[in-house]
Length: 577
Image (cartoon, rainbow, N blue to C red; front, side):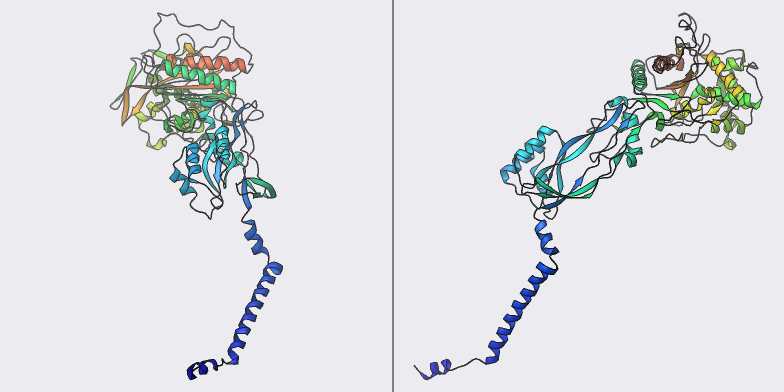
């Protein structure tokens, strides 16, 4: 051994270094013991949460959406359970082969599925919503860890396209998207709950741990609609639109005692059970959201204003010859020129000249006031989303020609529901009834607009309009006395009126002796040759009114052979504004 090696072996480390190292090790062990005691004895929530995160999940408990039923409890919208395929990205364990099979079953691109599963911090994501049961079962058979089924509800509409515009539909999350489904979302939708469960590695629930929040189920909504009358109205409207090759149509049936809407249908329509391809043009409830110029159906209100003001009586004679009158540079014409007519005959024959003369004899404010009081220019407050107020300009802006044309329904716009409601002043002894789409128990109080005497006088005039010599003999109903008024108005096109496009309408009520129903019909752009309201809309009124009165058990007030149609060679009472 040389001297250098001996010197190295004789080298000794300082004693303090070993003591410092020993102290550090002791402190480290003490820290570990303290930390273990803290986590396992004083604060074990952290470890429990970490453990539970491997198997515990919070899942949503869906609230069942409330039903929509008609006045007789017939279901119009119900929620049926369906299965959706969901996944827990944190637990997913899928092979390439399983991915290919899963993408085929779900009819999805594999990359799309991978994107949904990319965030492994998420505990829940939908892969595909609302699948048929047999398809969902095949997904489960794949046995992919982290992929499971989630129970949901899908809305089903038994009446399909017949009730589509009234009921609307829900989206994929079962939230109201259109019509009454949207209007009553807060009542129908309820509130979902949640629960804590234990799942195995395949995502299957093996144990319920606790209910965190119970779901609040949606409430049932009972409508004023009578399903039988609705089907009747829809059938007749559809047939008329097809027969006259019309662009669209609408119908409203009102109970004049309660103000309830018993039926409301539109054409064209759509199937709310097939929400894959929806055309917005078919989804509008035209009876509530679309405006049109009512034409001669407004003449009874002009006559009522004149009677109320005392400027005329029912038998007051108005000279309408030679069938036209000039106001400034404009000319008002009658489609069927007459001579001297009483006020009642002005309504019966639908004379534009006679109505204009009655209107011009009144202060503009008087006519505007009655139009406003019957609900023109304000929403009908039916509760339907998107209902329009119509257009009724301030009387201070009226020129004489505008006051004259408004007397027969030009220069003013209304919805079909507004027009039907306005006619309740003639059926309810001068009171305007509040309308509703929800069932009411008993009569509804109305707002007085005209006197009972004026209302009775107008009822008699309107009965003349559907008899021989009137514009709407095709509106007659076997066994019942009916009354009503036709309308045939040129459509607005650009800044003027289209020469050959019309809105054909009819509004009437029955029985005359004790009115129970108002039926309003509108046919948009009939193009099969006929376009007068008495030929196009009045027959629809007749069929619907006849069926509805019998369905409601309303007592007849006329012989069964009371219908008297003009002979085939008789000249048609024309009407056009």
